[in-house]
Length: 374
Ligand SMILES: *Cc1c(COP(=O)(O)O)cnc(C)c1O
Image (cartoon, rainbow, N blue to C red; front, side, top):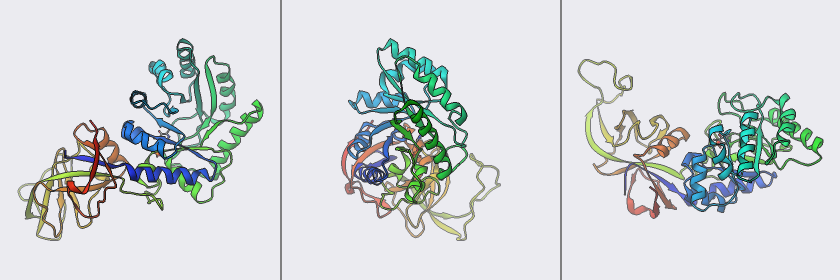
């Protein structure tokens, strides 16, 4: 099997997604399964749909197009404001897009008229994190303007927190979104189909008894893939945190001094030479580096420690083990490491079912493999 590789357990992703879908259903909240961290890989998208997500959401039109080409016909949302230069592609492939700018909405309207289609839109509201969003006092006026645009259907409001400034979703900001949605519904005499409260960082608020109000959708990526909530990176009870792992191969394994010798200047990545109490360590060099992954987001197997990484090499203190050259070592990833590995052309993606990674040395035969993505 190719190394390095991301090993993606579709059964565990299914479990995570269906667990979240079921728990949120109890609060009247549907799930948009966010596909951007895996570039819209159709196998994963299909898994999310089987688990009961209502929409698929992606920030890139390319990923939405890829899922369409794979034959997925379910509703898809573009969850980043469209580029005007891509308006026609957005209307062609996405059912709905999130928006904050009239110039973009006009371009979507024009593109939708040309394509003889209706394009649905959700307006994002700024609630304090200062990334995307219309200032709350401007929302009602812009809703009116949007309702007048030909071939555009206003579907509701959304918000996104915790992505730029770490502003936490809570009863106060969620109540502000609900109140705006209620005012707009009252004016028009009909409920908003979608009030999308946020991303995985909203889960803590929901699961600790937050006041749901009119919120009826969340857009979830990280929590489904990694089984953790992003605010404190704590595991979400009942979810798998090992649905995805990164496997790299040992290319050198030697007992070496723990301290470098010679005159010491800066290294390629400005690291200070590591300090270690022992005079000698079992050092393993793995064929993976900063070109493939964000090494700060890797968690090695128990008993191992990541000492350093350069472009193409990762250096492990293997503790009491002496992994043989050619053996494979599996790491857990955080979101940043996952994003980089998913987008690296040097990391292959392998889909497995029911993988168990309980020991450091992964043997290929442990996995019943389903398919190998390009
Ligand atoms: C990435 C993204 C999400 C999903 O966030 P997770 O933390 O992965 O759940 C939701 N909404 C928007 C607008 C996003 O960009």
